[in-house]
Image (cartoon, rainbow, N blue to C red; front, side, top):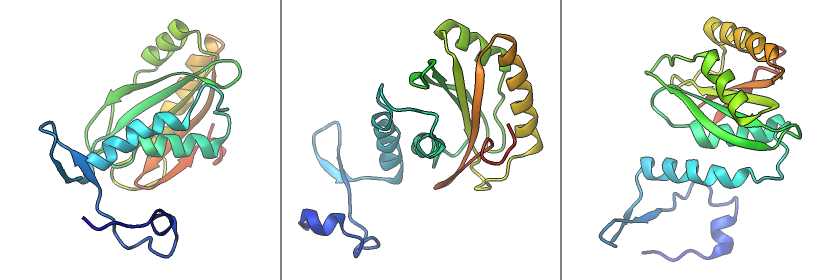
Length: 177
């Protein structure tokens, strides 16, 4: 295994050098990490992006968080961050796992969870495995319906993030909330 100095591994000069990552198997042997291994580790590492003190009202932080959680998943996943009154995370929940092109999302279930968790606000996200960042008509309809349902129980719907590959878009930033 080739040893790379820490400074070289962190420099911008070798970004395309392609470092091989290794994972330990259940038998204790090291093997080259697969793309799935790397993505699974990224989803776990995403939890470190949001500590109890992170203000999730910052769209950049929220987009990076959901990118780490949903990028690279081969089917649609709809997820919700439930927040307290200071926009700190109470819980991350994946509400629906769907197919390549759609996931069934039920506003009733999102509202029930918000009430159960005593959430003051939510941020929703889902991925587009197709790679398009453009919100679909169904995405915009769901956003309107969910915003209305949450308003009835005094829970703010702050944003709906769409993740496509290594990019993400905020419907709030697009003026679609």
